[in-house]
Length: 193
Image 1 (cartoon, rainbow, N blue to C red):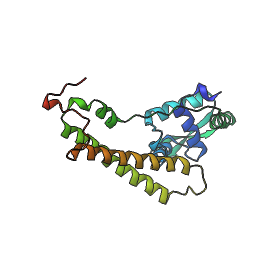
Image 2 (image 1 turned 90 degrees about the vertical axis):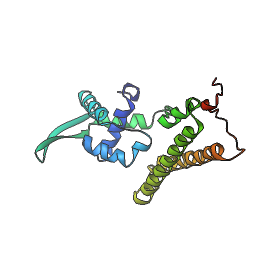
Image 3 (image 1 turned 90 degrees about the horizontal axis):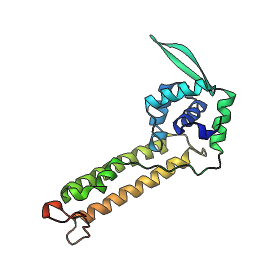
Image 4 (image 1 turned 120 degrees about the vertical axis):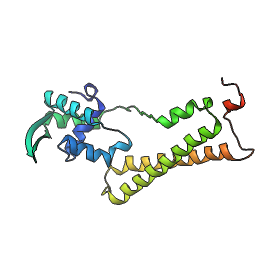
């Protein structure tokens, strides 16, 4: 099985299992401390991916008692380990995907008064500051050392710092007298083109 035949979320699930997260719950918990900053996993996707991976023979699952409930515990098969290694070593640039609801709002902010646009920018800056604090805490607390795990963490910190600085600059542009205010205020009757 080649990596192109699997969704990225399924490949991330293989990596999570290889890293010692053998249940869907453990994967979701691990993702909250790591991959959520660059690749989000939903419980629905994880369960669907694990079923598909098991059907294709890339993982083996067994039910184990866990309190009053059963939980499914997974391990990689040889084919699963090969698929993971093929993905990790693939000669592919991958796809950089960036989605941000607040940036989507800013794209259409010509439709709202400047003070409302400023509020969106401030929410973006506040979120960036919170996420930066979370990433820096992970950096301090995580045992990443010489591990390659520090690479996406370092990039996440750098991107978040840049986004926070950018948001601060846009706040100044929107609030300083005589500053650049490229945003027409629809309440002032400016034409929106």
